[in-house]
Image 1 (cartoon, helix red, strand yellow):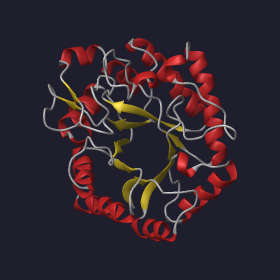
Image 2 (cartoon, helix red, strand yellow):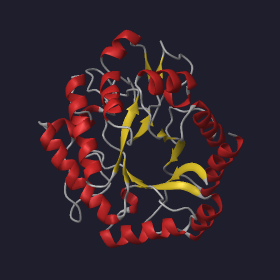
Image 3 (spheres, helix red, strand yellow):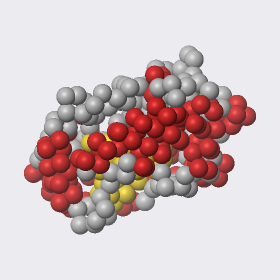
Image 4 (cartoon, one colour):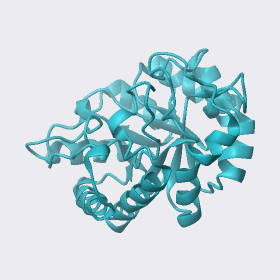
Length: 292
């Protein structure tokens, strides 16, 4: 088994995908809107994916935050509000529990939420209304409520994006964000929700940020910084759970897929996320695992 979570192209697996996944034996899989047409179809696709691997308890991931980031949409699934529009921890919990029941019914086991990043004035809109609030204490409270709602519904949450993506001045999907905020300020703001979640829960997963924090590590994004993962994420924030990279296809990361994979795993990520690509690119990621 290799520590990779792969996406697939369509509503069913191609023969090429089936053959590659059967040979590579990835840890798990992630679904996107392109993979989700109806409940029956999603269940059949998940069965196909799981049939490719020999290990049991295969994690099936999805990004179902609410608002702009939803993969399951009406008419088959309920509409989900953006985090910023929810006005109480109870509302967040109720929404997350309802969401968890929908996911569990399909056979999805892991949801890439909550987004515990801060809403920061003047930052890129890639986080924006995906954040609950600009106040770290409210973000911590609401993120914990979402985490609890998902877990109570049988879903593993993924806390993202460690150690904080809210200040990113550009979209990490498109270019490299560099945050120049001093470490003292980060400790008093961005890190606080993650510390609260880490101290309250040790079973949730975490996802790294493809962001450079210039005062901590001016060279490497958090995903590929052993210093940030060991000293900030694991030690200072205290996150003890399973840590997965954000997607390797994002343009904030430099190099080929083999290099991206190797650097992320060597820095301390437990697995990497490869949401979309050709089978040849998937194979490059698998080779990066071998080098590690």
